[in-house]
Image (cartoon, rainbow, N blue to C red; front, top):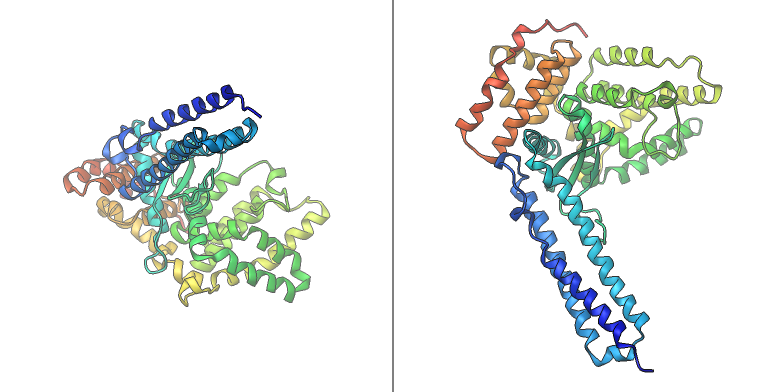
Length: 444
């Protein structure tokens, strides 16, 4: 049968159009206008541009191969329908690349925004500090961006992008409504915890232990099964607590303080613990890592907001079962050992004694004598100190916001330019409200 050449000519024009559009794809490093302090890290920029260039070359080769095939004698033996099918595969791959481009553009375009672009760069530094575990794994680059919505989310490094390619960087979406306050650390580091858990294979190894507990304790099997379903989110909360202490719980309360019906809504298909038990879990984890009476106080406040009295019988039974099982579960979590932890328990590997409430309070008081100290500590430590000061009612929200904005700017500058003079430019911002002038910490 003689093939209708107009069909092949149309496909040829469409393929050439794809290649023309492909030529317009340029590395982000040649397109994004931002002050140096707002830029992503060189490692992240290189990883993104290298990845997109590889995909662009692959697509260019596919397009040229398709055009060569169209002009070859072999094409004359195929029907227009089969030729169209081959072109559709090429176009789908091209569209997948555009989707990847949009994902990275969401991260990079904001870097040109006044002030917030630099703050997001500061969040990159916070995320990198939260992910760092020297000796345990090599962390991937982490980049952050702001978006609407109530909660944060992560697209983990080494997972699949549209089209099946491996993501070269971890991308964390941060809700704009959390900028700028200490609660941002709770959300951000929770997402970092998902990346860390994947690098340490924690969910897989913990799942085995939780299933064993369910089999050994049939009377509590339902609770252990729920903890297994929620383990990914719980490990991420554990990570946040280990890095920023009570700020993790306060940030969590800020996110999950919803109408009562939602706080006690138990959806067995949801990977997140329902809000009421999730806050209880956070307090229990804090108690296990850093024993202190503040956890009882926070727990009492949470229970006063959402008393269990009045729950329907079955829901009340499940809540009581989870509460009874919770201490044993948290001990299992803290004492968990697996190969990637190099013989340490999870608590030993992740928790830092300097994040104990007493030591954080002492560090905050030292800031009163020397405000410069706050920019000399790692980003997660700074947020831990600020979160503890909020819990102690020693820091007002206005000063907290001012400090965090200044610190984010400082970390962005420090990551970009190793110049003492430039870093000193943010010193007045950090000194405007000295801790010594703030209320005395309450006993918690």
